[in-house]
Image 1 (cartoon, rainbow, N blue to C red):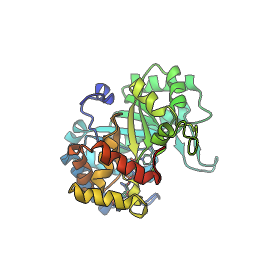
Image 2: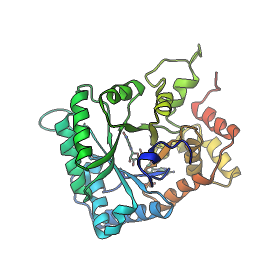
Image 3: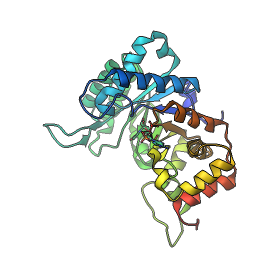
Image 4: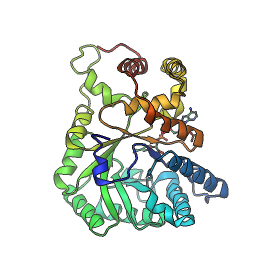
Length: 313
Ligand SMILES: NC(=O)c1ccc[n+]([C@@H]2O[C@H](COP(=O)([O-])OP(=O)(O)OC[C@H]3O[C@@H](n4cnc5c(N)ncnc54)[C@H](OP(=O)(O)O)[C@@H]3O)[C@@H](O)[C@H]2O)c1
């Protein structure tokens, strides 16, 4: 596969990622039950069976229970850890007695968060750590030292960011000697900002110079791997104007709509890695089928235009 920057740092990483936010039960403190363990096992087995090797976590998902249930699966099958790659995130803090919901990219918080993720996942290393959201109070030099410490200790192999535009990423990278190799953004047929920022430039009617401008180009030029969260638009496409075009095209190509949603992201030349948030084995398999689909330019644009709801300028 060409132009897939993460592969050089993480050999064995799959093009598709299984998002694990739906594992572990609800966003509460209730213990993980047998049903949740079974659901997680089935989702992970389905993902592995279609060649997915990279699994996306965050310290906050279901209040730590997503990582916890995944850790249980790893402990049940000790050889599993070496057959997959683990990605987690840190930097979002829930409201607590000390303050409101907030972001925290301080060294103290990042390192504490990594320790906790490693314990929950029952592993000694994260293959990738993403900084979940930009923290306006970040001290970039402190951040750089913290990432270096985590790397030297062997606790984290590679780093990246999430939900950051080009200038934020470039600013952090200017201080960090280790590459920030990934940017995970919400990208789907229902979340088009990443495309619109480029295609509506110089469009008197619709143009807007928003913060996204240049993010796609920056990541491609710098070899930053793009990952798309919300790749299935959380199923919301079913109530959206794009549904008709999506379903008609899916029927013509003898695919299901989920396959087409993922194929649409894969067709973009920036080599996006879609993060599939499903826990349903059949839906996971349908997403993986997109790897064998090559959308024509006409079909790609038909979906884009239907999703944006108006012709291109
Ligand atoms: N970096 C970030 O800030 C960030 C934010 C959010 C998420 N993420 C990551 O990205 C992953 C995916 O994001 P996501 O979960 O927001 O989006 P997603 O993959 O677009 O959607 C997955 C969710 O939508 C449901 N769904 C999808 N298609 C459906 C359909 N046709 N009918 C009914 N339900 C359908 C799935 O249910 P089933 O399980 O039943 O299939 C699941 O609950 C997460 O797991 C997480 O790893 C990252």
